[in-house]
Length: 237
DNA sequence: GATAATGTTAGCAT
DNA sequence: AATGCTAACATTAT
Image (tube, rainbow, N blue to C red; front, side, top):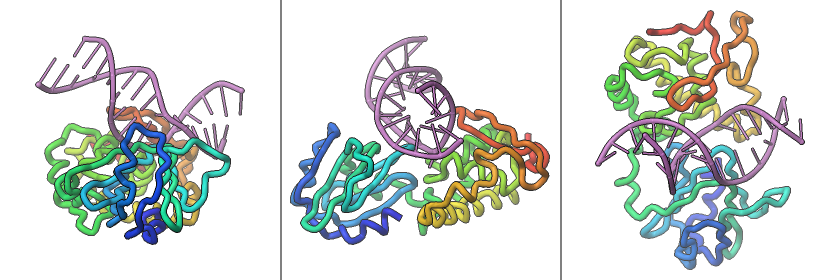
């Protein structure tokens, strides 16, 4: 949504910056935005020969033409002749290389060139990994996060501790297509400011299918929060 | 008011 | 050299 929201700034020149990072933000002065792109959770503001990479982490925010109420510390503000972009709570860096050298766009589940076959090949190489880890791997599924992991595993009836190599190919195809479907639904719900309302498993107590209590556990290499139902979700191992 | 959580990475230790 | 762990970031709902 932010990508659409800042389209009016494409072609516009940065007239001033307010910078609370270690970055040399002044290099953007008098430069014009050429394009706005995304790769997974990376938000990319392109200039002629470099790119500002923004990662909003857990609590990042972008405000356009206004400041966040109540007043919060600003990471970076970019001021234009006719507007302002204000960034909060994000990780920023510059990318010097052409983006096509840095990013494999086909790993992004929301890209036009998303390639599920390539993802499948990578999964075949890690049969012993847990599915809860695999779905969070940004090199395979750029953009997928912890909520989506929980929701898609619930939708497809797979337990998070299932092993990648033990999940049947048919089931994987279902997971991959559901990841894409859920990503676009997630975006629409976020735009409407109602994405939490649609969680079926994440942060929920009872399984809507069979009314059994969900298991809540911190699983995988990064011990991320997982919710699942042992009755309707299958453990492949 | 304390706690926990949509995520990543610099920096240190092994 | 490579791997692995922790602190840090910082807001908001419960």
